[in-house]
Length: 376
Image 1 (cartoon, rainbow, N blue to C red):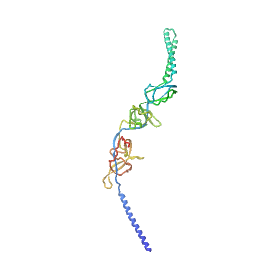
Image 2 (tube, helix red, strand yellow):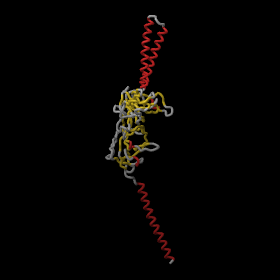
Image 3 (cartoon, rainbow, N blue to C red):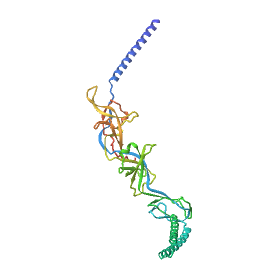
Image 4 (cartoon, one colour):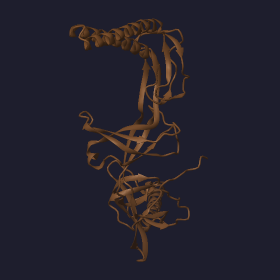
């Protein structure tokens, strides 16, 4: 019985040894296959880095401002007797807007004009008598002073009447009416806003390092959400002589034509100053760039001999680059890439350095400098 158990144990040990040997052989074969295994090449789309000449732009943000804009207010206290304008309408310089009650001033003016007429008669009489030496020079001077005083009194009353007859100081478009007929206006009471909208200013800021590049007369391009898809052009007309000590920015002002008055003061605008000399750049699709916090990179497609069969094959080489401006689907490469090199144009996030690839551009997207995607 003991011998039977002994031989059974020996048989089990032998069986386990045989199974272990078989598994060890299988694992060894799998390791050997893994060492010799090479993944199939990845299918990629490519684009060629091309030299181009791009216009240089200095971007900024700004706001629109009327060339002339004012809140028309009352200069003197008085009751409104006439409102001669309609809200939102265009007016010309000198057009009547509001008339205040001037009855008391008109009565005083009549008295002042009568006094002026009497002073003029006395002055003329005194001048004749002085020529005849019938009066003294002091009496003539007194008549002259009385005439001038009467004229000044009448002119002062006329000025009060003019100040209560409120007119448009310049041509422009009126805003909302802020007064009512019969309302008692005090000095400084707002009546209506008046804005000259054509042309219109756009004010924006640029960092101090751009001062040497910017000058009056340069073209600016303006885009605003109020006019989607449209780009307006203007000219730089003023540059502030001082730099803001807090932000180190300089204030720039450009003038735009606004014949349809679609641009209004207070609007936000994206501004780009166009430099006069185009800049040579190396251009690649922006989708070819693998963006990373430490540095951006691209995958260059190069031809190398295969290590297994010695035949030429396409292999990726990761190249770090420094990017510049962007236009549409393209990005400018400042350094790290040369004209004519081929880079992977899409799907770069799934690639690695040294990976073998095959090129298939049948499904490659069309890259444009001014893309207009359809609204699907």
